[in-house]
Image (cartoon, rainbow, N blue to C red; front, side):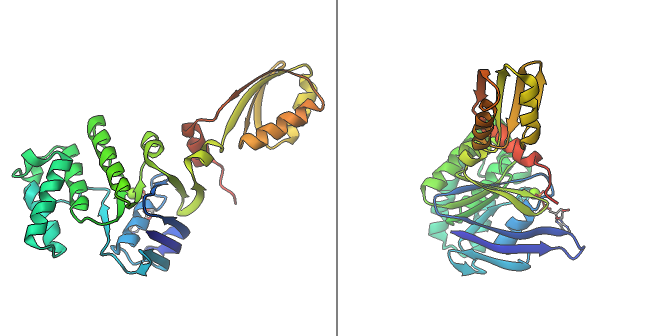
Length: 296
Ligand SMILES: Nc1ncnc2c1ncn2[C@@H]1O[C@H](COP(=O)(O)OP(=O)(O)O)[C@@H](O)[C@H]1O
Ligand SMILES: [Mg+2]
């Protein structure tokens, strides 16, 4: 389990990379960390791994501070030695962790099989394709057998088949009970994998919740009314955006509850002749969240 409590980080350059971040990643959970470039995702992950000093706040891994034994990481850019072979790269990771030889050999065999890199075991890393390098980097995380896993844009720049393969491996780690935090710009990946979503902007959490709640972040409906002037008066006062063409209105609200309340208010003064309501899609909800104006 990963617990992030009121974490803030200021680089010596004066850049405040993150401020007062709090969330948890429980065992069996996949939490997606989403946000534009520069919003502080990599910084937070490096603080969790002990690569960077935490700064302010506390990070607990399985309830303990500075407990980096049971957390493994796939960095944004694969950190592999080009001259080492695939097998040697995995071996180097096990040696670094002090894993006994017999156990290390078993783990390496298993990871080569899982990642589909068995036939590349004797190939130097510099001869691998981009997707194979990502798989090797993923393998270096797997071979640690940790139950807290952090993955920084693990499927960026990989082909769809490799992506599906990595997703399958992530789901296997989830079913093993791992606590998983992954950053991603791929909305279909987030939708497929995550059980919880944390959205960062400029180093602050602007949303934390389930994918279901994300869908409720945005709602769109079209209506036809008998009295356009009266409808406009009500809509102008409401907290929504709308366009209209004669008596046909297209309305966007923050969430379903707000839309239902608005429709109820409208029915008090106008007749709604027709109504079409889209169930908000995850994609639109997440986009609406990321585009939300900043609260000053
Ligand atoms: N080593 C560093 N020194 C100074 N500033 C940095 C360093 N690494 C990242 N930053 C800054 O911190 C902010 C967050 O960066 P980062 O954590 O890499 O964001 P993300 O992973 O979301 O793209 C950015 O403004 C970035 O320029
Ligand atoms: Mg990053």
